[in-house]
Amino acid sequence: MTFDETKDKALRLLEFRSHSEKELSDKLKRAGAKEFDIEEVLEFCRNYGFVNDRQYALSKARDLKKLKKYGKQRIKSELYSKGIPSEYVEEAVCALGDDEHEELMLLVEKKLRGDFEKKNVDKCIRYFLYRGYNFGDIKSCIENIKEEYFEE
Image (cartoon, rainbow, N blue to C red; front, side):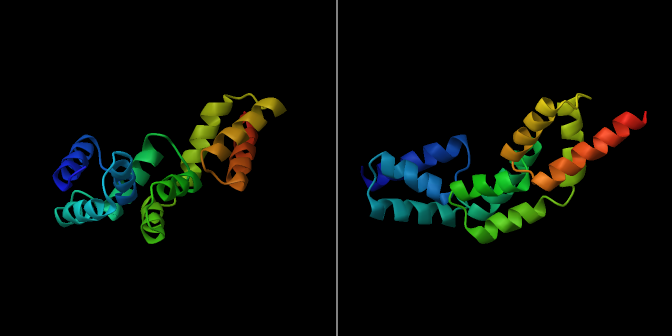
């Protein structure tokens, strides 16, 4: 692959969606680009603002929280897997705010739908652990919902 082909490939990839530097680099390597050309193309993309890991982390974290309803741990994991530096990951997760508990309450309540059988509660706990929520928070939400449910 020549430099121009590498640059064209990178711009085509970025046309569809934003990528982290690592993602873009990996895709270009798989396409057969030379290491030197990849570095030059990444530098070009950085200079023109086509690739910005900080912005990517903030945007991706917001999307994962709003669209996929992921918890902070899962969001961190997803961002690390995209090759985002840890300072950007921490900044992105902090920017999400601290309203996770209230959102989790609504999600758990919707998931349980008043069924507090052990099997259903265990399934609910696994579901939210996988999505990156804290075990203590999940248990606390389930207990609060159970109290409200049986008060009525």
